Image 1 (cartoon, protein in one colour):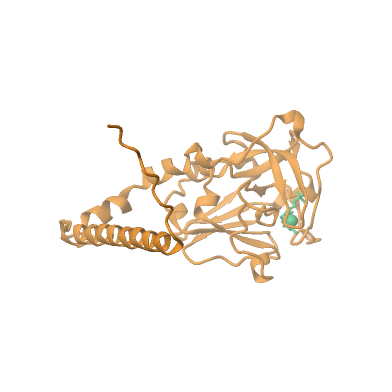
Image 2 (cartoon, protein in one colour):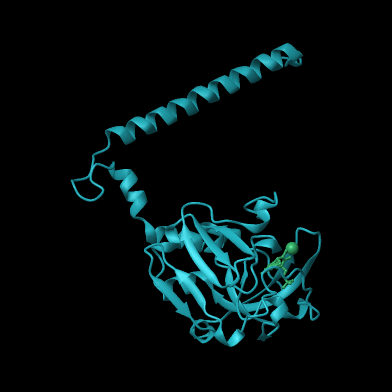
Length: 260
Ligand SMILES: Nc1nc2c(c(=O)[nH]1)N[C@H]1C(S)=C(S)[C@@H](COP(=O)(O)O)O[C@H]1N2
Ligand SMILES: [Mo]
């Protein structure tokens, strides 16, 4: 005898809600249990021997020690901004605002990049010091919060290469990098991950020519993961801190991160 499959009656709204509640409730318990288990595992994990950081639980310590891993993760190709062939780059590149670039006393030949490490160590670098490092190029879509964008071609040194070369790794572990114009009138704070993003560069060329004054000569920030406002032109100083450095547009109410 053939069994006839009776079609199941469609669930009523109430049944559907009840079922969904049961699922959410279950998920809550499972996840909650996992979190609690994880916490207990951490609490019961062995403590490391006495020392500078003695007493920290080993799994935490392991995470803290992974500087190399930290840098390697920043190099992951997962979050790269889209790039274009050079032929797509604009020849007439837009020039926007010039805050911090109107100091009549500014002499390009006297310019130095003043870097203050987290330990207080100071570097005074010439543009040639910076040009001596490996050169990198990028062609990408530069975006300004005012509503325009343009495919542009920049060249300079990758921030990570700069950090490594001048042995600023310890400083670069701070949560933020602060950059200011030589006269201190325009300034930005950048979160560590964005500052060390593999596409972030200290740029000294545009379209294969040295930066013009208006575009930030002799050195500017090109940070493709951020809107234009963070791309500080004419960098004078660089600092590192766990506190947020002051930020010109954040003070005017713009998002501090201004990420894309
Ligand atoms: N020193 C300085 N840097 C600055 C600015 C500025 O006014 N002063 N404007 C920012 C803004 S809002 C944008 S969109 C870009 C514009 O860069 P550009 O003039 O090379 O197009 O620079 C950024 N960097
Ligand atoms: Mo902008």
